[in-house]
Length: 144
Image (cartoon, rainbow, N blue to C red):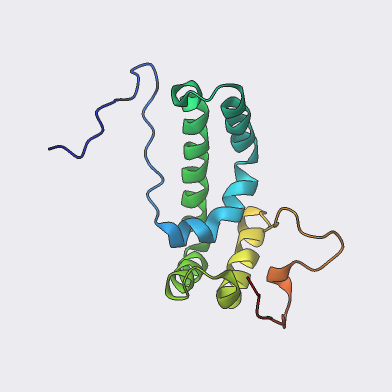
């Protein structure tokens, strides 16, 4: 029995490599990918909203993937040490951002200095310091 899917990509679509990252590196780069690839992501979402057929948006999905690969390549070239330190911390700390703020700050500073990208959390309250920039945040237990 083969592990290869029974369906193949249409021949008229160019091949695109997979991003090739696990959850830690993807989570570390997520906000930067969102900012860097915003236009491609929005096109993909609009395409998915107009037609739910998965084949309908393959071209847009490939653009998103290529954009993410491009950013990861630039990130590794310019901020490789900071990126590795942050995602490795996430891996060790159960994927919790708040436990990895020190390496996150170093990564954010490098990304701004070298690539001009800032971490922006969608839906953050205006005129308040974002949670990832607080020097001494107070963590409270959350009841669920």
